Length: 156
Image (tube, rainbow, N blue to C red; front, side, top):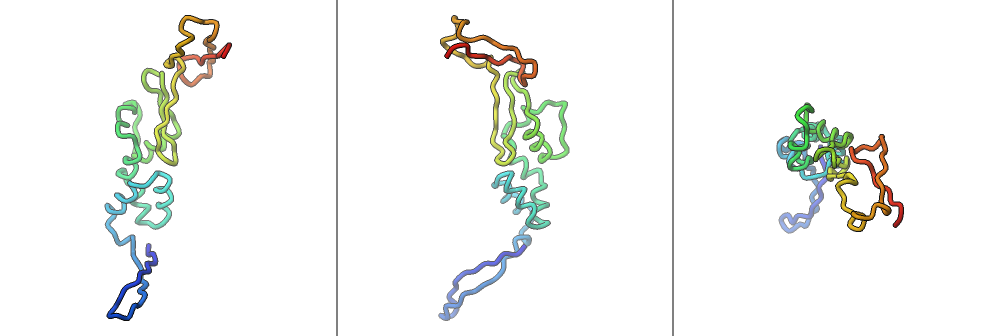
C-alpha cells in the first residue's frame, strides 16, 4: 500500500515541495501487527481491508490477544476451545459467560473490546428493604438469564 506524502524540503536553497510515496506494506509484518494491536477491534477490522499485508497482520493472535481482557484465561471454561484469539474474542462478544457461580454475566463490547458485566439482583443490597419485605418481593421468571430471580419494587 502506498500513500502520498507531501513535505516541504529546502533543497540547495531552492525551496522545492517534494512529493513522494511511502510504501506501508514494505514494513515487516511484526511491525504492522504491533501497530494494529494499539488500535481498537473495529479499526483492526477496517485495516484488514486496506491491503493483503494488513489483512495478514489483523489475523494474528497477537493483535486479538491485545483486545482481550488481561485475565481472560481465568474466565474461559476449560470445556471451551478456540482455534484463534480472534475466534475467542468474537465468541466473548456474542456469547456472554456466566461467572462467579452464575451471579454475574460477562461479555465484550464488539467494536471497542470494553468489558461488560450484568449483575444478579441477589448480589445487590437494598439497605432499607432488609427487614421490610412489603417494599420488595422477588418474582421468579423462568426465562431469566441469571440463576437468581429479578426483584420487583412494590413501592418506591
